Image (cartoon, rainbow, N blue to C red):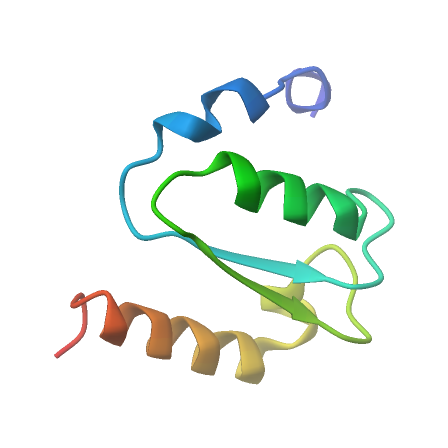
Length: 82
């Protein structure tokens, strides 16, 4: 955990060259929502940003059904799912 806290990936976001889905919780107190917009802006190739209302830092756990639907739709559009 100590290593994660000091690890800054923001300068590497521009290197992402694949379709990207960003899922964020509007009530994230660990990494607030403005960071989601900053990440979206830095990632090339038009990433998709989805913000879940009434959700904190772990949307995949807090809203698993919605998260899975969003992920499945994204993967289908990206051609990963048939």
